[in-house]
Image: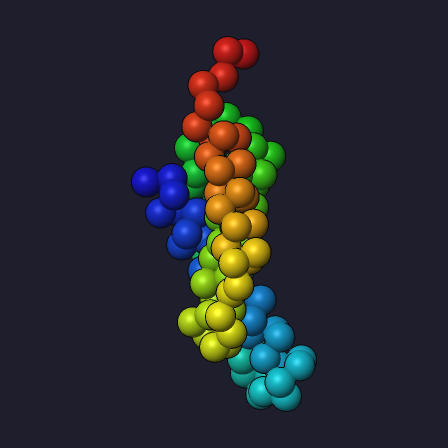
Length: 107
């Protein structure tokens, strides 16, 4: 369930940030900002649902998932295919996120 929360949070964050990018860099209507703000609120709420004892640990582990989701956005929304270095880097980040999130803690 945690990974699903992270993926949903990543999609919400990327969509929210992209709405600002579209308005600022692609000269889209300022109306693009409204759904972007809703999306960013959804992102924060989803990330807060992650079951962990420390917020910083949830945020750190989320970072790896966010990187992979950003590359998926690059490919699916922007039509730019990630190269093998992008994919290798994302895989390393997901492994790192998994270590942070899943390794049992003694204290």
